[in-house]
Image 1 (cartoon, rainbow, N blue to C red):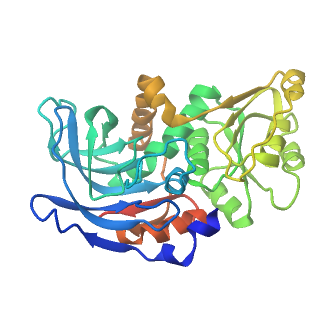
Image 2 (image 1 turned 60 degrees about the vertical axis):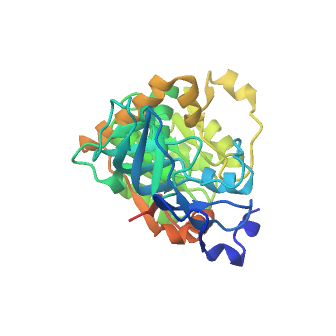
Image 3 (image 1 turned 45 degrees about the vertical axis):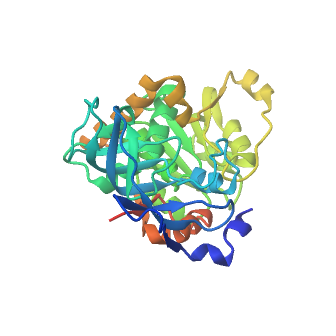
Length: 350
């Protein structure tokens, strides 16, 4: 699948100007006009804001693997073509609807748009999915927070109930979410972290970002390596890889340990050996962070507010792996697909 998306045309970004829309306000946006094909940059017409909506001048937009999947037609949500991908951003308020009370023109905000549409110079969004950025937090750092840190906070605090002094195993530790998990576990929850990644370079970064130990699982058994570092096992495992890495993480849990499944970056979904759950009274838990926006908005919003608060207090330090201009969006996608970067990949709209 990746080969199709990474074919030579991906590196070419096309720019179109809709002749029929020659009047009124316009802005540039990345559009998926055909699945598994390069995105195109079009100049599109702005639409009016509704009573509860806000128009935001987007400065930075986060790129997540989910954006790539949706452009392949492989994500749970399949928007009609053409569409603009992107689900998180930071920017400044340009205009508010008549019933908006939470933000005003000029406010700096982060936003989450589960129906996509943020890889553009402006975005119109409901006021309830915007959060004001504290003065001490930059727009670039703020753009890293929504998906990666929102996920990390709910995984560690809400789903796993991580306690101070517990040991947390993090797989895919050098990715955007992995680094966020390390940051929150170490600096907010005061847990000990074992970072697991696929190269020495990635392990080194995880250690620099706060992990106490690291394991390169491309060089041998993760389970055996963890056993040497935590003789009784780890209390919490946060897994984003799946397959054999998930199974080894599960086997590395201590009595009453908890493993939280965040994804399957390795491409394989493991079958759960439920006898292990029984023998050590352990729990296997899933987390789809975006679903909380529909099912428990108060908790979803709290994860965002907490991320901003932790950042304002200097407890967490978001890590940006690479920044691309909007017209380089296809190169940015390729960067993520080939795992060239560690940390969050952002699009800069300025």
